[in-house]
Image 1 (spheres, helix red, strand yellow):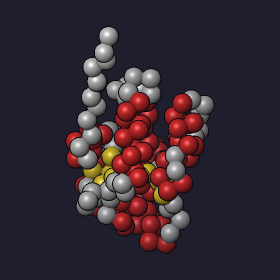
Image 2 (tube, helix red, strand yellow):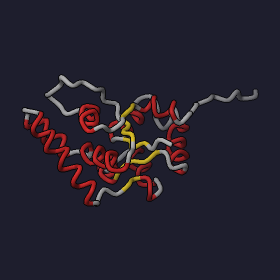
Image 3 (cartoon, rainbow, N blue to C red):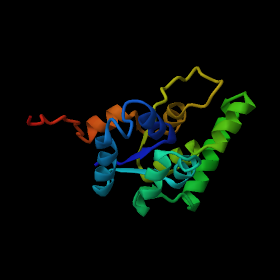
Image 4 (cartoon, rainbow, N blue to C red):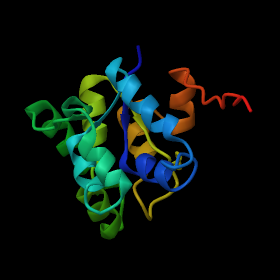
Amino acid sequence: MTKFLIDTNSFVEAKDFFYAFDLCPGFWNALLRHHERGEIYSIDHVKSELIDGNDILVRWSKQMPKGFFLPTANADIANEYATIIQWVQANYERQDAVNSFAAKADGWLIAYAKVHGFTIVSEEKLNLEMKKRVANPNVCHQFGVSYCNVFEMLRRIKVKFVLRKIAV
């Protein structure tokens, strides 16, 4: 069974676009259901990013079960994170790109996935030529971590959003 770790941008884009809470509550229910099956998680650093606001996503994040946002305070994860940051520093000339990556949950997410065999869920795309910003798929590619976007994750866990016919 594949286990997925969802990045901050996937939650935010879901809320803002295709899976807005008022349009597609089934998406958010599916995340919880598949978490209960041991398939979908995120990490504590992502939760910290999500609760830095005042909207429905903040409330949702705070209501998720304790085990949804996995802790990253672990020596193996910290060591992998340090290796990832060293690689980013060596391969990205723009210090603002390095600083931005290091300040966000991304490195921790990839380190956790590497140590525990998870697949990263991110809306970013692989672009090995891009140097102005550090994209998660580029780092995943370098470190042998699987990644996909939300649509692929939903297909792999066989989620279907079906509008039932309402009797008149």
